[in-house]
Image (cartoon, rainbow, N blue to C red; front, side):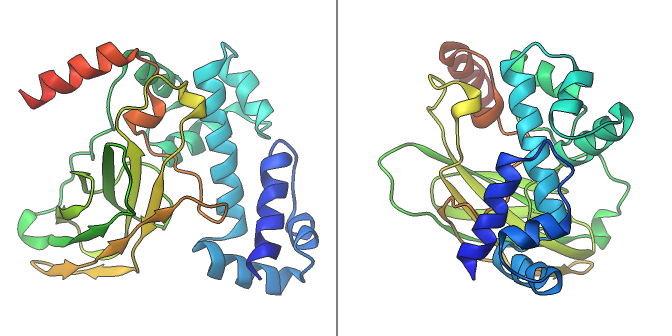
Length: 257
């Protein structure tokens, strides 16, 4: 069934600027709407509607990076007729507003930090685990975060950065049902234009239920990115920065010193 789901995903990438309906997507997959929705969620971990929105905002990020188009024009380019709706949803899915995202990319600012929360630390939990990353001869950096869904979007409620394989630790995770997701990127990829950079590996753990003062283990096996993986929307410097490599290296050295 995965090939049918991939056909629908290909349609999303080809016609993301159009008002695609569930009938259009199910038709591309040669499935009934009911069966398509169920099969799509099983294959990708999310709904067709959320996947399509992720595709649109991923394209919007690229347009913000590689063009001087106004935010209004970009909203139309990715299928939104309302600038307000586009801006609000972009900010929720990416973690920052479109204009701020463009500025972050130009200044080489790193991943957006989790917001200050009012949760009592004593009422939060901890999630830890091991990352299994496929072998690679490149320098790998893995971003791990706690999200509301299996899509790396918005600002994680807790995050960690791991060099290649190893253990991660996510503290101060509020009680609730969460997903632990990880993306591995090439740490020395700044000679490639941002809109051509791709995550190397992706992984999403099973849903984890966090309770006050609890400790949960979620091991994640990452795999090479594939068509079924939702686009990564959160701000990751190795994917989103427009800064030259020498400036990025200097910033990394300053952060580590």
